[in-house]
Image (cartoon, helix red, strand yellow):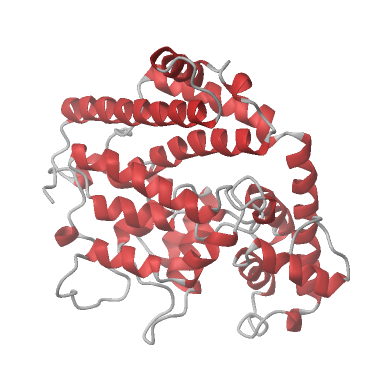
Length: 379
């Protein structure tokens, strides 16, 4: 792998929180990726909601398939820019490890439950997973990942939480939220790949579900352009082949736009190192036109898919599950698994426990504790 001067070089990594000898056949970032793939939290993503609850269909995206798609897109952009593909893959695979069951609905409910206890941020929870909650090694908690991977996992962070991180780890992953610097370019790239993946797979899942139609989403300029191009090149094409080809073309267009725009920004800024890039304005981005078109598509999906009455109905029930689990565990910590019951930070322990659940386990626990079965059709 030939790295550009501004890429994160594993040989120049800021290191791990607990020093370890180098692996004989893998770089530090390859090792991070492997630790993430073998983690318990990563396996749980297969049964965590993206938009549609797991039981609603076998082919809808989950947090796991979303993370894999982000990793593929990020690597496709990283290579022509000379960025570190192993690092972007590690960040992409880990960025949703702290997500709750039931997607953003579960996150919002848990944040409300934790309002008097410091709140809940899924990005910060992903960092907690890799720093503390995974229990796989005899000498330390967490996965002991490199600084560069950890900074990419922490995509967003409130100032109050950043101050707490800085107090525990001076100059660590919380510092950039206080001094307004940027993460490494690989982390910036993963943020963009995450957005590209959302736009594409939510169109696919939305049309597959029947909640939106191909004709509807074709009215959005970014996607409609590629539907028209598909039909012009393949007259008479119908059904899913039109959908898939238009999505493929849109993905390619956004990837190439990100590559070209970022390459131009890098040429103008000329960062001499990864640390130099951190002191500059964000360098990985779409063009202004692609950014505006992406925003239009996101607004369409928000109105017509994420706020569709059927999605909102399941969202309300999912949030009820999370709220009632939180209240019950807080009142009766012994109902949680061993390891969470004896912690002095009881509310945070409950949040950690619930955030680590899959959709199906949360529903089973809710039924066990309340005698009520919500979300008809769930196992």
